[in-house]
Amino acid sequence: MLFKKAERSRVCLKIGFSAPSGCGKTYSALLTAYGLCGDWSKIALIDTENGSGELYSSLGEYSVCALRPPFTPDKYIEAINLAADNGFSVLIIDSLSHAWNGEGGLLEMQDKAARASKSGNSYTAWRDITPLHNKLVNTILQSQIDIIVTVRAKSDYVINQDGGKTTIKKIGLAPIFREGLEFELTTFFDLSIDHIATASKDRTGQFDGKNFIPTAETGKIFNAWRNSGTEIKQSEEKLSKQTESENKPFPEQKSPSADQLAILKKRRGDEIRDLIHSFGIDEKAAAAEIKKYGNNVSELTEEQYIQVLQKIKEIKK
Image (cartoon, rainbow, N blue to C red; front, side, top):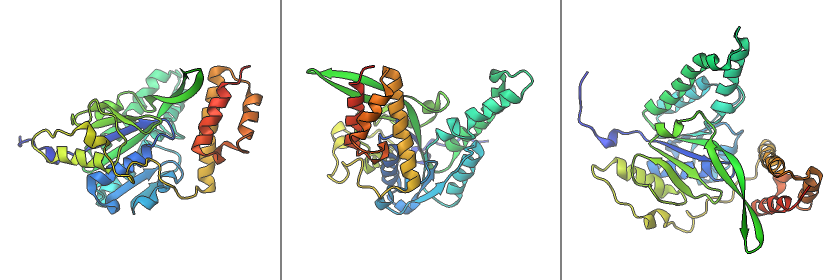
């Protein structure tokens, strides 16, 4: 046991991005990772989204490890340790939410434990599951490489009235993971539907009160803070100043595979069902409105999809 001089350069960063689907978590994480290490070959990505993490492979030659159900904590831990053992500098976990509410994740494990117990008490079942959760979180925090986690956020819709025009905006609520994750990380960002990041928790002090689109510059700012003995004053102007190519949060992607289209269809279908349920909208009328734009939701462009959401809201039972 000994004391040593504190050195910020020894810190391995743990960064989080939280948002509903379609807000740019994966792309933001990739650009931030590149800013951290400056070498795409040093970036690894754990993909729980059936290949969606590979849609941005045109950015650079990063490596992907695909996780399949069941999404147990042990599978995540094995992949995290594998990334560290193979010499990667930055690991992206996309997404951590599957370890919580995915097939075979912690919530499902807790439910099975409760049903298997004599008492059927769901609260006491956490005694067996909480150590598994803690083991996963501690593996992330103690890993000797930089780690960026993405987590899904519960989504809701707000109605805005502007000059007689009604618009619907999707907003993110709480991250889909056990409460308190954001307090464990170095910095935790919330992303808006417009891909704007705000730090809900930031130990570096570099992002407090700033609203910006994450780019490679974001990772460079983290590095500059880590490698300097004094606080670095980064102006909001520098955070938001990006080149024309960097300022495109969603570059043209590869054509999705059949599996990826199925995932996209399900996500958008879930969002529309949530909207219909929340506002008491007639389902047949909503389906008829969708057919005006295409046969299924997954074929719509992002602009068409927003238009569909707006039109559906105008339908009354």
